Length: 254
Image (cartoon, rainbow, N blue to C red):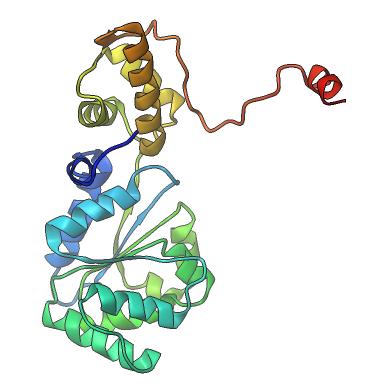
């Protein structure tokens, strides 16, 4: 689906259950007592909308958010954090850590959000985040796949500093309804079709939006304003389409 930048910004504000869970986690970290840990973790399968929830929380709380890349080093991580903090990165990794601690400590309720935090654990870099969290006392949110908690268990000094865990949940009918209202507001859906979309998408927000787009195309071709369970168009499930008659395709190629 093609949207403009303003549409994308407004559509990131859907109050899905994982958005609410993320906001609750951030507010809990911000409102904690001084003697309590300051790290929170949101974890769950790909496509559940964790990143969109993080972007929503970022916009609401003026958080610093970075998304870790596969090629990142300790220096890349610190440069990215400082750039998001609005300063030019300079010096060694230690210098940049000190500067990040200073800036985050000056606004101790401004969250630091690390998306794809699994990669930091895998690369042995998560202790860098622990150092920033401990020295600045800023709220720190780690976001990653479903294996993130089990990975953190192996890094005791980080695991011991987790205040709370927020498992991302699959979308339900109401989440699907909200996504439909945002992305295809010109269509009406029956509850039965919303359930079907949610089920075929395995509760993954990303796939739900894709399937809503397929239904929108189908409705446009069929002149429909309301779509019910009789919808017989395409569903994207992530499965790779199978060749109907492999032997026939081989004969054609020959």
